Image (cartoon, rainbow, N blue to C red; front, side, top):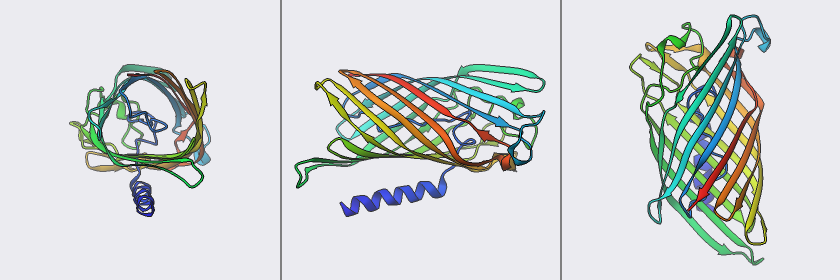
Length: 306
């Protein structure tokens, strides 16, 4: 048990050091998935995600006539597939609806985003009964995969040299992801830790988004009703930090930042149907040299287990 705890602490330290994202989960590359997915079966479903930010804020993060509001909505077809006793595949195909309101008018774009695929290996899976006759379950999955440049990247939407580059459907690059998912549960109460780090490459327009990473920690409790219905409310923290983008090998100063959010949600299962909601609200943020502000984010999913 002590060895397993050290493994988890090492993973948490690693992700806290190198966390980075495309301005903290907004725009391209937002792939927060919530509580550890059910890996005993195949799963396929739909996720809906929504997020928004204010850009071009003035001193002290105050709105000005140049301030924009950008809204990102994504419908995602996703699945988790059991390849063997130890190997699983998580994949997603997003379709995004982006909208930007500016002082000179509004603009929208919609289309398929970047397809993601992650292979996971079960490194730890232990089950034992405690002295109090309670079941203790300890699970750790590690994984790696690719994000493909299937979403449109428009170089014109970079705006000016010192501006954020979020109003895109994709990054235009092949990117590598590494991930870890840990779950520790004592009978019906548990803690879930979910981390991912994405290494971005340079696209054909010589633009490279900063490496993207997230780590979330959630406490949850499962209630079983009539042996057919399960509900699990959860609460926790989500931490993100953005590295610099590079345009023509020049650093984009306004692309840097960090964000901490509180998360609240629940997961429900009825027979082979799973449903979940997650809500995230900012607690602390420092993004784009103070010119960018993240707002509340939400996610809803409906899945089928087979």
